[in-house]
Image (cartoon, rainbow, N blue to C red; front, side):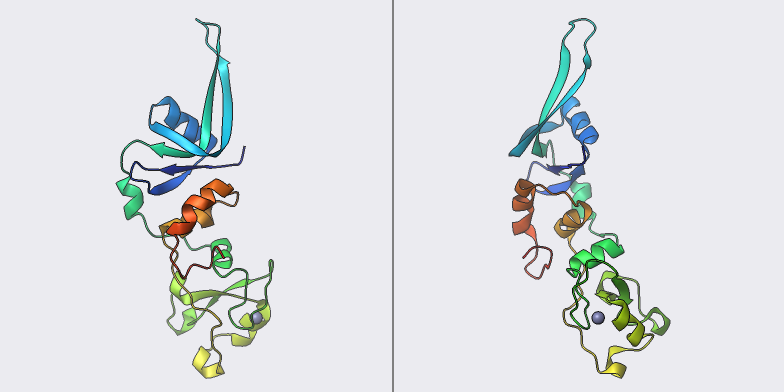
Length: 186
Ligand SMILES: [Zn+2]
């Protein structure tokens, strides 16, 4: 099963995704207060030797875990990967606007060789043609402009970027928490 469970803390703050194994473990440990959502998954375990009954655990797609997850609140740095970058930029070249599901590159707006960093605010999706044309030059030198501005995804956008199989009820919960400038949901 590849679907992930969305864990939220007792204050309603989405903290992380759980694999089904992790979700079952949390349930068995008594850490799940309750679950909600439109989807329900049942996992059957082995039989109990004493009672002869088979164990089973049924979990909803969104799980409220006991307590407040401070660690998740502090953890705000979203790892920069090409996949996440292209999703942030909606698979659109920042220079010519070409939409390409494949074959995009990570362009450093200020090239690394000119002192630019490999960080969310200095990278954008670019098609190969634009990236090659731009080379190690600055936008001012080329007279180019960005079609959209780079931004660093926040924690909730990070959750969207980490899971490619988000269920619609999970999406509904996360959507209102995205910043207005987010390009992840339109
Ligand atoms: Zn381009």
